[in-house]
Length: 191
Image (cartoon, rainbow, N blue to C red; front, top):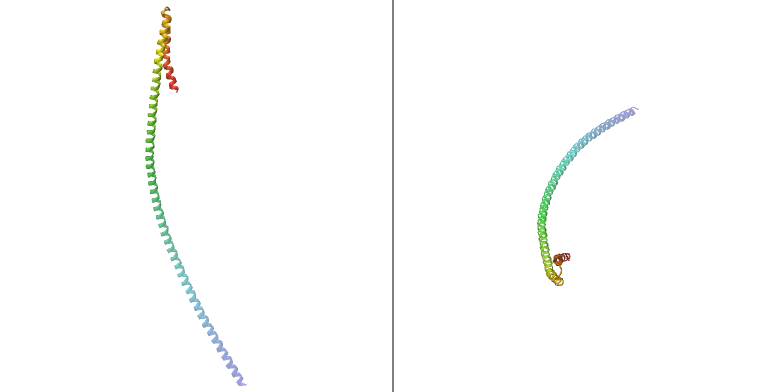
């Protein structure tokens, strides 16, 4: 029976050695796992730092580019505004000069038209005056003749009558002679 005790002892020793080995292997695995975890953490931190640095660099680059683009746009807009303002002032000046030229021509035409109208009016007035004068002269002569004839007739018919009576027809004849051209002139002016 002594052999049984020896077998048990060997078996228990072997079990303990297996146990120790398992513990050692477990510890080694745990150590390597913790080391790899630590390494992974370090790598993640480094990656995070590089990513954040890259992001910051990218943001700075984008900001610089947008600033440059904004400045360039502002410059081009300012240049365009200046060009438009210059073109506008030039166009206004040209329009004003054209208006002056046109305005200068129009009054000249108007004054010429006015002068022509005045000349025609003057000539028409002169013609009308001449016509009236001719008519008046033509009417005066027959009126004077008629008055003289009337005076002669009256003088022939009433030679015995007093001088006062003779004077009265002469005055009437003179009045008729004076009134005749006036009436003729008024009629001509009305026409």
